[in-house]
Amino acid sequence: MAVHNDRRKLLFGLWAPMFLVATSLGWVAVGLFFASVAVWYRLLPVAVEAAFFLGTGLPALGFGFSWLRNMVRRLRNPTRLLIGENGFQYFPGVGPIMWNEVSTVGPMSLNYRGRRIATVGVLLADPADFATRHRLGRFATLGLRLDSGRLNMGSFTIEPFGQTMQTALRTFLTSQARTDWHPGDN
Image (cartoon, rainbow, N blue to C red; front, side):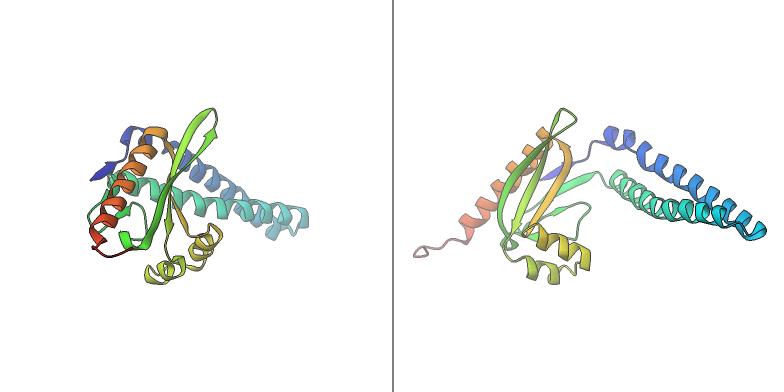
């Protein structure tokens, strides 16, 4: 089973990272201009302003490029969630997650600007083993540990999409649990 992205919403959502990249480029350009003026005329207040513009523009530029890259990846790959007999894969993600790595699947919802937003949480059976097996980075491992081994998928998706994901994941998780059961097991 596959759950697909809504391409219209993704195309409409491209304006935000493009605006961030354009604005950040402007801040970096102003910072470089102020830096050249500060070096040429040896003015300390202008050098402080240059440091401010460069210090805020460069991280925002990096974040904007990574955000734009992720949005373009989502546009190129229409599948958001792929569910199979052995596990599932959420795009973008760390790779396939096997059913024996999952403990439970549950909903999370919150209100965002008056709309009900749903995310689906997958509680991992062994988060430390998951982090080493999927070769997660330091920050991803820390986030997984702080979130008590819960992977949040489908953040900021509209409610029916989150319900579809949750229902599909629970169905496959229970069917996997039934196939692993043998007579005499408790």
